Length: 371
Image 1 (cartoon, helix red, strand yellow):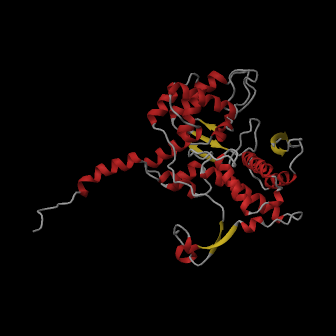
Image 2 (cartoon, rainbow, N blue to C red):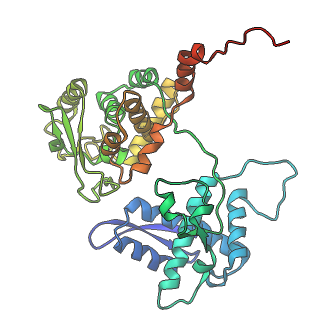
Image 3 (cartoon, rainbow, N blue to C red):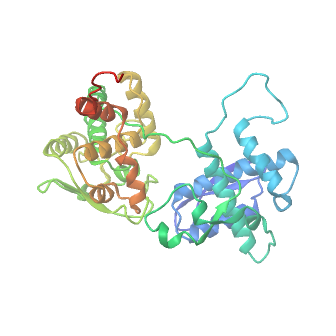
């Protein structure tokens, strides 16, 4: 099994799962086309394709067709993902799972959607999607929401196969680490990109999709627009992503320095971030260019980070500055406020600081021992 990348008639990049003979897997092709017509983002379609690739490799391993799968085989797929190798080979030494519970649940979510589509398709009569869900009373859920008193007698669909995910705090880095990373930048473009991601909290896809006219220097603002899939494959993630971000005068000055140094008369694109060397010099910067830059900066600074960690760090710092959740949601471009609540969780440093402030008030006057 392998994934082929192709261009549509409208010059959009799409993906196709093919077998060892180069023949497309028809059910997967139909499913991806359906999701594409529903408006799913290119990266989402790519993720669907990769998840189903692993699933079809598992089907080849157990020598079964996709329409012969029952819940036992799907549970075997879960274990196959955990082991990451031949499940028939048992190690005597306990090993760490090849994939996290969160990653495996994402894979299973794609399989749920795939079989739900097949069940609703007129050419298939697969009822696996019904077998994989069951009705659960709202009173049996692990938490009580704001309207629990109204919804406690209602039922909702729960997934039969799902791993328990350990709760993890979001990964962030300090402002001192940001300073070290900026000092490790050799070019004004790299320094501008890192400071932009940190200060604005925008996604890397949004940064690569910026055009020169998106900057409003006098007002110190950046406008994020949805222009669809661009030449460098950058695109806006959700319908809530278009927004206006206020930034500092320091970032605007760095923007002017970058434009004056890089956007010369030889540049024939209005993309803000462009390649600075190589055969494709002055073309829009791509995701692979950012990945290579991050690797170089990690080696120079000794700090592990990603563009998304810079986003987390920015929004977490704003939360510590007292921003309410509704403003954080707007600045982050989140469709749902639940996505923003992840930044409201205090870290260990904040807990320690608050305890030091409250320690004296928590002391108990024990007095003399009772006789």
